[in-house]
Length: 112
Image (tube, rainbow, N blue to C red; front, top):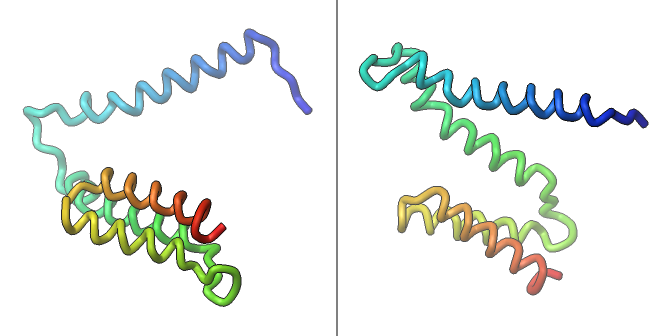
């Protein structure tokens, strides 16, 4: 087990903080509102959100085994409610929140 001194910890936290700040503000410096971003950047802005969402869905459901335990029922119910909630409200964050709360309630009460 490796331990760090207080100064090493401070330096690491400072470097990580500055890197995070730089990556957050770099896009505003490289592509100000008055300047139209290149087609490639606009293309990435269009295709990455659905691609990342799909990747998160696959990652979340990768360990679900339909032939053992509760057969993935809480996951299926939560995903279905999330999809229906999104179609109703068109709010991704709210749909994710509702689906997560429902899933947690299901696994702690109904499928416990």
